[in-house]
Amino acid sequence: MTLEDFGYNINYEKFKTENNLTGFETGRVIAEHKERYIIKTAEGEFEAEITGNIRFTAKGREDFPAVGDWVAITSYDSDFALIHKIFPRFSTIKRQAVGQFGEIQIIATNIDYAFIVQAVDSDFNINRLERYLTLCYSSDVSPIIVLSKTDLMTELQISELLQNIKSRIKDVPLIPISNISNYGIDKINSLIEKGKTYCLLGSSGVGKSTLLNNLSGKEIMKTDTISLTINRGKHVTSHRELIILENGGILIDNPGMREVGIADNTGGLEITFDIITTLSQNCRFKDCTHTSETACAVIDAVERGEIDRVSNNNYMKMEKEKAHFESTIAEKRKKDKDFGKYMKKL
Image (cartoon, rainbow, N blue to C red; front, top):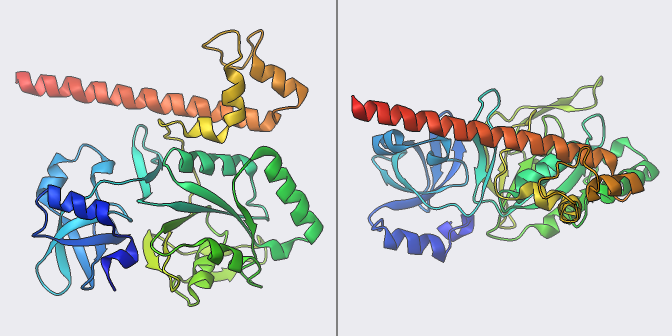
């Protein structure tokens, strides 16, 4: 197996040459376990740690390796290596770290497409779908919505569900599947391209690991039996892992996410809610909050039924969340800067 088989390309080779890294081995992070990493190279797999230099120069979580990263390493025996350099990322899926204000959690890096998986049972929530879409758009990742467990509904119910989604979410591929009957799995397989990297996003128990097993044709991820009371399997993935499929696609499974905190500073919200963004340009006031102002184009559109009221409320909630996160980041940076000045004086 070559590096190209799991995503290596000429841009990484160019970076390696320009940064005098030709003396190092190249590999991709395929799993992470509390600052211990599994690196896949053309020669095999290595357990790895970062160098002290990376650890002490890191300013935040984004300066540490993550699943999907390309890295320069040196191997010291048959199964251990040190990570010396992280190659530039073309995409990074991240969210607010749960319970840590102003901190970021990296989900995966160098992702081309994200399968946003939601079950059609009690897990289904269009507001959450819009959150995942914002996560993808702010990361330059193309989203694909996958609705699992369609065997729990009739064709009419599924049709109504798809129509509800399409009324709020435009121009995003939407694939209903059943992991039991394999309905829709062929459509997902037809979208997977050799050398491209895909990740699975969704809550626990929606069938992500079972989907991965179906796509690979073998049981790669362990899944527990379905609960008869809540109609969902117990999700047992506890870490991120990269897997190469037989058709050449590269797939990353992730633990279920109970919270999808918005850490968007690159316009993801504007793309997800493009209708609101476009209409807001017609508001009388440039700093319109779209809540109570007169001559607000967004409020008028909601009243006329052109914008879904629930979707607008979801947008407003995420916009406030984004603003709070950005202000927290700014405050944290100021404190760090002030502390640095204080230490310099000492």
